[in-house]
Amino acid sequence: MTKQELSDTLRSRGICPTQQRVAVYEYLLRHRTHPTADTMYRALLADHPSLSRTTVYNTARALSKAGLIRTITIDADEQRFDAEMGQHGHFRCTGCGAVYDFPLSEQTVSLLTDSPYGADTLEVYTTGVCPHCKP
Amino acid sequence: MTKQELSDTLRSRGICPTQQRVAVYEYLLRHRTHPTADTMYRALLADHPSLSRTTVYNTARALSKAGLIRTITIDADEQRFDAEMGQHGHFRCTGCGAVYDFPLSEQTVSLLTDSPYGADTLEVYTTGVCPHCKP
DNA sequence: TGTAAATTTGTAACGATTACAATTTTATTA
DNA sequence: TAATAAAATTGTAATCGTTACAAATTTACA
Image 1: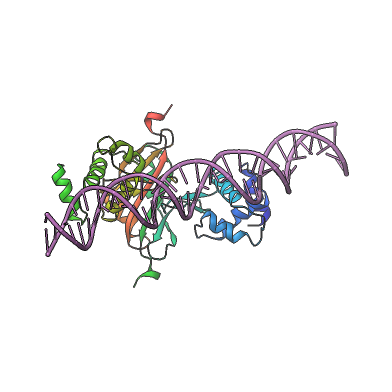
Image 2: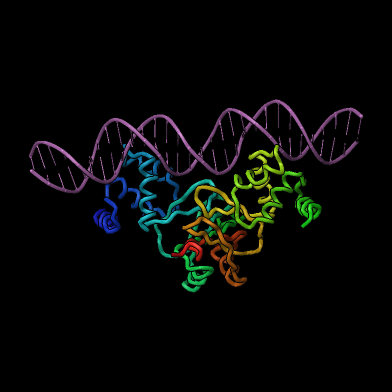
């Protein structure tokens, strides 16, 4: 996605595409690592020396409200963000802390969102030990 | 469950059944409202005037580690706790904030815990508007 | 009963997130 | 283009849930 396309996407959701917002959104699109706000802040600082943490938090909230990213609460102590909006689950390795995506079938998704009432959002979180951390 | 049975349950998991711990565990068994630590603290204060928030947090952590309760992170800003250990999902009403249980079939559970790697824990969170809050 | 270990308590510290006001940037209008 | 208004960014301070810690209390055990 070019900068122009990123800008257009933001604008189409009613978000003014400032440099900072484009940078945060682009970071999330390019890094499917489910980063925290602070991780993004530190990574983007090199290219955006004036960036502030508050802007990262504000941007993440704006993008989330606009439906461009989702907020992941698989960790109790910090929020992570994800630009992949297709339905999928998240697996967190209790060894290394990494969060992996895994697919959810259409059938599973509709099953889970139908019950008990119609649901607008769905999050599936699992934890275990990833192959990389297995002894 | 009698106090004696509560104590035995705690002891069987290697947790010394102090008054405070029994009280917290009993509260969670009797109130299936997925309370926060602070909610439990304020509710238990009447019967346990010397209770401290720290004890509620410590107890919740101990019970959780022992597998007697689970920690729910459906809200980004606060942890909730749940003594119902049978597999089920959680639905949070965006209107009133209440969290409801809903059933998960054995099939769904095994489907979700098998993929992508063997998972030890599973949490399914949905959000929407509950019938009580619908216009 | 006496002593060591475990637990509770209250306060202080911590860390993620948000509030806020000043500054800077962007959009609008003449 | 210049002037003005509106929006966004920034940095600091505040907030709030949670944890660390040390003193006091309770429990377990010899």
